[in-house]
Image (cartoon, rainbow, N blue to C red; front, side, top):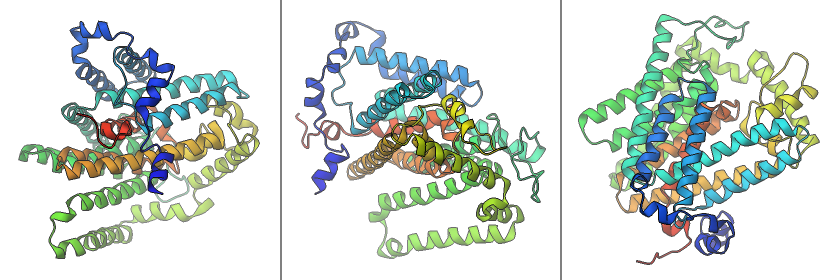
Length: 462
C-alpha cells in the first residue's frame, strides 16, 4: 500500500527511463559540447545564485515591472543551463506536478472567455514556474544555499528595521486598512518598503522561519547573535503590521517548525524532556498568548474581530467577494476563467455585489479554483502534498546522516505552512515579492531531494 501511495504522489517514479523515452528529452543537452569548452559555464551554479541574489535584494524596493525583468533573466539562464546539461538526477515529482499545473493553466487560457487577459496571466505564471526550476537547479550546493538564504535574511533585516521605525515614528496610511468604525481605526499599520501591511507580513514569514533555524545552523557566537537579532526584529515587524492573517500564519509556522525541531533533536533528549518538552512549550506559548489577549486591548480587539463575521468591515468585504467567486466557479467549474488578475478583473464585475469590487478572490485556494477550475485546484493540492512529503523524507535523510544543513528544510516547511495559512484569507501570495519567495522555498526543497529519490532508484549505482 505504501508503494502504491508513493507512486500516486510521484515520490518514487522512474524519471530516468521516462526522460530517455521522452521527445522533449532530446532538447536538453544540445549544447553539451559548448559547455565543456566554456569557462563561464564552469561556474554555472554560482553565477545563477548571483542572479537569484540580485532578485532577492531588489524585490522589496523596486517595481513589479523590474522584478518581472529579473524573473525573465532567471528564466533565460535556466534555459541556457537546460540546453547545456542533461536533466538526469535533477527532475523530481515536484517538477512533474509543476509542469502539469502549468499545462492545465495553458488549457484554461485557450478555453478562457477572456483569452487576451488570461494569456497575460499565463505568461506571468510560467515565469514563476520556471523560476522554481531555476532555483531547484542552482541551489543543490549547501554552500550556495546557505549564501542565498543569508542574503535574503540580510535584506529582510533592512525591511523589518524600517517597518519598526514606522511604528515608533509614525507613517502615512496609504489605504483604509482598519475598520473605520473600530476603536483602532486610526492605528498605525506598518508596511515598510512594500506599501501594504499584509504583503509585508507575508514577506517576513520566510525571514522569521529561516532566522529561527539559522540560530541552530550558524556556528559562531556572532553569527548566532545576528540570527537572534534577525528573528526578533522580523517577528516584531510582523506583529506591528496588525495583519490578522499574518499573526495566525506566524503561530502556525511556529507550531510546525517547533514540531519538526522536536523530531530532529528528540533522540538527544533525556526521557524526562522527551516526554515533557512539547507540553511545556505549548503550555508556555498558550499562556503568553492568553496574557497578550487579555492584557493588550489592541491584540484582543484585533483577534476577536476575526470571529465577528460581518460585524467587521474587512470580514464583510471578504465574505461578499467569496460568495461572488463561488458563483464564478459554479459557472466554469472544470477549467475556470484562465490565470491572472487581468482575467479575474475582466470577469468578476459580472458577479460582484454592488460596492464590493476586488482585484482577487482573497483566498489562494478559491483563486486557484476560479482561474484553473477544479482540475487546477486538485493538481495544486496534489502538488502541495508532494512537496511536503518530499521535504519530510529529505529531512529524515539529512537527520540520519547528521547533516545540520538539513534544518534549512525546517525553515522552508514552516514558512510555506505560514504562507498557506495567510493565503486562506488573502492573496498577497500572488504579489511578486511573496510569490518569488514561495517558489524559492519549493525550489529549495526540490534541490535537496537525493538523486535516488528523484530517479526512483533505491540504490544508486556507484
